[in-house]
Image (cartoon, rainbow, N blue to C red; front, side, top):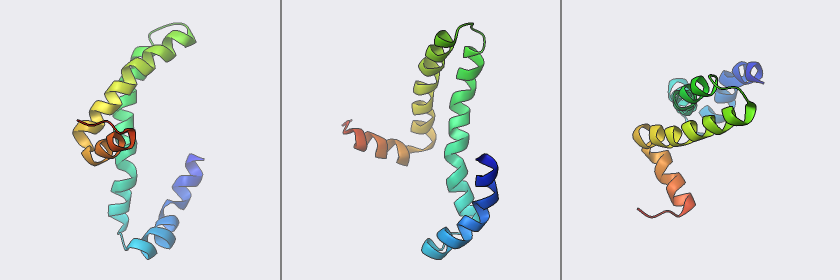
Length: 94
């Protein structure tokens, strides 16, 4: 699936995004890859820590306990627009 997505990334931009909203390839690429890199920055430490344990349930639990708050924090600092949209979606006032 990853290979397919990579293969259709530029044609998909050309046919859909460029024709509908006139966004350039660089702008579209940044908008598409930014959440990916923020997720990697959040999940990598959790993966490393969970890899140190034996037992699938323990690893899963530790991974969630580390990755979830880290993901929210990274997005709070780097992607405030997304964070505010998710807060509004959850109807959390603050």
